[in-house]
Length: 481
Ligand SMILES: C[S@@+](CC[C@H](N)C(=O)[O-])C[C@H]1O[C@@H](n2cnc3c(N)ncnc32)[C@H](O)[C@@H]1O
Image (cartoon, rainbow, N blue to C red):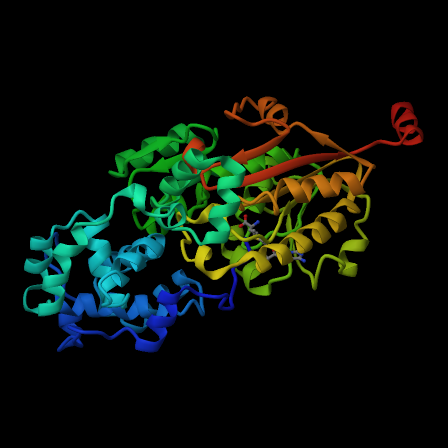
């Protein structure tokens, strides 16, 4: 995923939010910092908390910055907000983002507009299971007369069949058209439903430091509900979202946070100890750390990225991991001369390409509103260029893995197909067989791996595996050695 930082044609709701700011009827500033810090429990929804939630949502809906960055900054600037309040604000803002299109339609229906506050009320009513009475009681005098009259009408929503599919699925039209064409209508419905649920918290056990069974036992002993992930032999899925940063297993590097789907990509690369490996779009090293552990910290693992900041975020993770074979390299782009000295030398190269990130909508629901078809076309061109540059680094017989966390054929199969057509020196390797060799069986995997939240319970991921052909002369020389 390549997080977009610019606004890309936000919805009418966003424009309305920007014009109005977060404040709308019934919003009052909390009278004191303490009022804002009140804890929410169940049906209590103090006016101060509603105010903060609408403030954050109003800013998020300008789509000028990623939603999680806006939320984090707001919390840093409002340190008195308690743990429960933060949880409520973040969950509610993300809920609205997931359901923005249908909530927007519901709020526009009476001409009252989709202000942040009305979007929040509609979300709580429709998707948090709060009744009109509960909301009225929770907000008490904080609810305006107009809102009190409007809420019951929201309940009487149109039947599903009357709502256009793109609105029902909470996707922009262009995305709905593409995914419905790719998957068919009923699978698109299932995908939308899965993407509209929050993702679980998955961990990967660092095999340099621990074993999965022991980690599971320790987590459970500490009162953290945890299960092995169904597909990745290294994964653990937590039932809740505890603050792991202070847990000894996290601090000592025995576990890292990594979606199960992302772990499966590491199994496709399957680096061995002593090899020369590159993670070309390493970012903050989510996959680098796994590759290093698979190599048992032996050999060389180059972690390259254009972003200094992301590579800096890799540093503390690296320190916890116990790995000593990782070499971070900041590059200007995929044509950087620092890469050319490694041409034809690497056993394995992973291209975890910058992409739309639409496979991560469970975690980053704003991505669907912040990007358009133009962005996807630009990304596809970039992906092709990075993959072509990566191919030059692979030695004969070496492996090249192209991966994205996108759901779109334009960023996935089409890029992989174009690469193969333009690079006769590479052959496709079956992803299903590569995984099967490591005892992993993924339903629906074939030549390529396509992970989908509604089928696999992971984020959406795509991977294609290629191998560089060994020319006849090279094969003969290798056999003679
Ligand atoms: C999908 S993210 C990588 C995530 C990372 N592999 C992980 O598992 O956490 C894509 C990364 O590609 C990087 N990138 C963008 N253009 C690049 C280029 N031309 N060469 C190398 N990296 C690039 C971005 O900075 C971003 O960190």
